Structures are given as C-alpha cells and as structure tokens.
Length: 315
Image 1 (cartoon, one colour):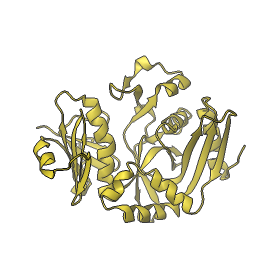
Image 2 (cartoon, one colour):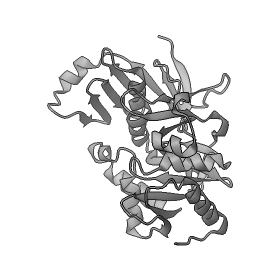
Image 3 (cartoon, helix red, strand yellow):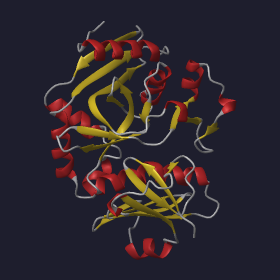
Image 4 (tube, helix red, strand yellow):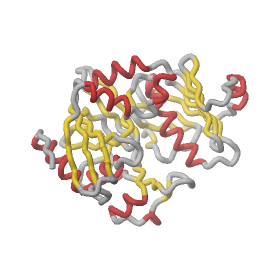
C-alpha cells in the first residue's frame, strides 16, 4: 500500500491513510534520523481488541500502548510513540476517522515521546510564540484567527506541541495549516459558511484552510493565555490577570490535551515535572471575557498591548 510522508508537530508521519489536512514533506527534505518518524497504518484491529478483553471501557493502556474505540467510527491503537494503527468501521465517515487521528491519536503519540500537547492554538508575535488554552468553546481558534487577520501568523490550532531546546527554552513546533471555527465565529468575521466544509457531518464546525498565514518553523514560547469566557455575566468586559504559583501548574495540567489519558498511561509524574519546568520559564495570564458579544478584536488589542509593553492591565 502506498504511503505518503507528512510533517506536523516536529515529526514526520508516514501514512497509508490520505491526510489532506497535513503538509507533504517536500522531496529532498528527509529527516537526518528515523527517530522523527511515526507510522500511520490501516489494518483490522478487531481480533486484537477482542483479545484484550476490555469489557465496557472504550480506552485501555498496556505496556506503553493505548487502545481505544469510537462507536460507529473505528478502533485506534498507539504504540510506543512509533505507530498509529487504525481500523475504521464499515461505512465510517473518513473525515471523522481523520479527526481522531489528528487529535487524540497524535496527542497520545506526543505523550509517549515526552512531547507536551496543550489544548490550544498558538500564533507568532514579534518572533515569539504565544499560546491560547481553554476548554472547548472558549474561543481559542477564534482569537488566533483574529490575530492572524492582523498579521500575526498561526502556528497551530487545537494542539500545541511543546519540546525544549538545548538552552532549556520551551519550543512550539508548527501543526498543520487548518483552523476549525464554529458558525458563531464565522458570523463574527463575516465569513460565509457555504465556502467551507464541516470537519465532519455531525457538527457545524468548519475547516478553514490557512496556508496564506501559516508559520511553518519552530518558535520559542513566550507566554500562555488561558481564555475564561463568562457569557452569563451581563456587563461586557475583558480582564487580564497574571496566574501565579501553584495555580499555574493546575492550569497547565488541566489544559493538557486529553489530560484524562495521562494517568492511564502511567505518565502523571512526567506531566507534573514537565509543567513545573514550563511554568518556571514563561508568563501565564488569564483573560476573562464577560457578556456574549463578539470581542475577538478587542482581545487582540489587549494582547498586543500587553506583549509590546510587557505589562497587563484590568478594566
């Protein structure tokens, strides 16, 4: 079966499954070492799943491997940070299968390789990466899209992959040139949903190609902003506050992508040590946004003002 070599998150993904979201590695750009290769293979995992006798659970970890099932979509097996095996169910939507490969599967591979995956987006401002983390629906992609429209290119959406350079700086590796935006965000930007495809048939979240403002090189991380929307509060306001002490560790653990899978893989100590190291080397702030108005561009102004002046304010 023909395989293509893609690149994302500082790794090369050699895949039997067509992944149109990813960038194909150009000819002549093969890695100096095979340790950056991860293989994505399509195979029948039914017998293996049954042999594991997992009962009612949909996620199980054994000996450095993680196995999970998504009803109506397929079986997914991540092994030793080296391979993703995929067994789609008959009739499964291809886009939904790829969504799990690009999200949960790749994040687990990162964990197995001691790469920290945060649930967020990242852009480049004045040569530094800034990440925006938060729970689903917090506005991470919307904010990074607003920043990109002001000339601050996108590095990654949904998963922020962090490693460290020889000098101990946290480094963000580029993801792939696509953003996912909800209908409300398209409305706020004046974008017509008819121009975009949904990420899969069951949701009204749209895949937005971003090749024209995608940053494809690794960049040191300067700061993280947690987005904390509070639509139930009537008065509209934007507040930026610094997160200090142990609260930083809690924030970073909470916003690790698929954090519930960390302890299952026996990686709780690794995560604590990793976020402690990260917390000591960057600034961390929380942006609280009250009201239900579209305020992405106001938030952009506040963030750029903070980055340029090196201070934060409240209002």
